[in-house]
Length: 209
Image 1 (cartoon, helix red, strand yellow):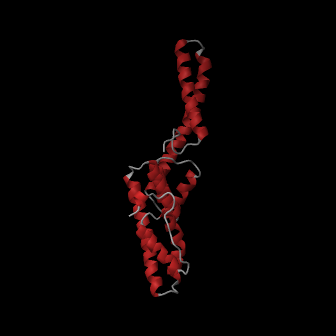
Image 2 (cartoon, helix red, strand yellow; image 1 turned 45 degrees about the horizontal axis):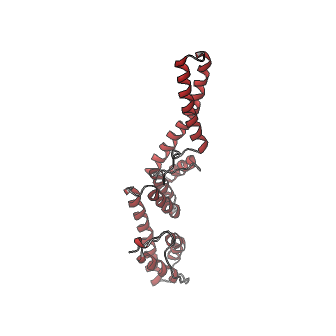
């Protein structure tokens, strides 16, 4: 996936950046050809600074916030960072992975896995994204397997039921191994809601193990 718009910038900010650059080149040409008095050109250089400077500052700010998220600090800090990013379009692999880590800190495992998937889709060579996705998936499946064992020996265990009710829908969406499907089917059966699962359309035969 390739986009010409820098990650974190809105379209209008990118347009400002491009036209600011074009205007700057035009002003330099006019300045050295002496076709327009220099005094008339000076205010336009101020416009160029605004047009180029505003999106540039925003880009630096977004990159700084995603760098903070990549460190996955406290929940309060992560919440603040995510609010700063808001709905800005994060399109680079590293930024998407940082968002995934932030969502995981806040307990939104489904969003974290989806963002990690997106990070890998943008850059399939991002080893960190592959590792993070695998680790998160393993933790999710481990919690389900543990809940399955508890519920199998104590069908009334409320904690295990809560874990399965919360985790099974997430794991069902992101499962990519046949063994995982078997564990999920067992979990649904223990909850009294047996299902026969198959892979989602985005899972290819090459991923089946």
